[in-house]
Image (cartoon, rainbow, N blue to C red; front, side, top):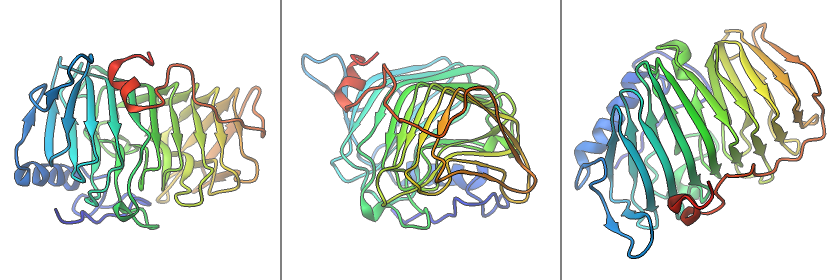
Length: 314
């Protein structure tokens, strides 16, 4: 499949921008069109013997999760060298106990998960994407695989809990697009992201928050921002550890000439990486905010693919 070239630093027009529903949706549709077999919920892969999860080989397929569906206990094998796209849409769906083994080396520049909720409450729980992407998957300009991309049409609420994302060539959770569209909210809780490019947790809408989570940058390969808040905000950050080791910015507010507000409490951030306030944005440091972070993997976050798929890390 051809590289889907895009720029992750800015919001742009619907015909060109990575935050545009048109561009990303068209990409996902093109993936489905050229896949050897499009796969619907629960129909892909082979049973994993005596284990309590299903093994699915990445073969360029698209798996669709729709309103009311629960997609769970899957081990995704990325060592095939091919891509897989999981699209969740509608409302009140659940994705849980999903582990990816092997690096994503497809080089397509897509998103592994493309998600939105049309007006209800959906959840993503206990997911391991810690093996990252291959070097050919992205470049220093940020053209590469995103772990989770939130569609601009997202109008409901999505909870992320116990998710582990590491070494992705683009954003770990790219959740700023609803700020220009549906206005839906995200709550990232008890999650871990490390050594991704562009940013690790990126959100935009009022009511969105990041809690009890850690960001770690200890690899010079992909030094993305720790938390990046886009307009309109405000965004809440509570009980987080953002350890940047001097790379990029720990907390960045505002982009593309639009201001936002970030409210931080009970957290630590790397002082040497610091805080950036763009276009009149403000980062308000509240109670118990320090500059001595220790980014640890929160309790309950899976540390390998099989633990995630089996649900043993719950």
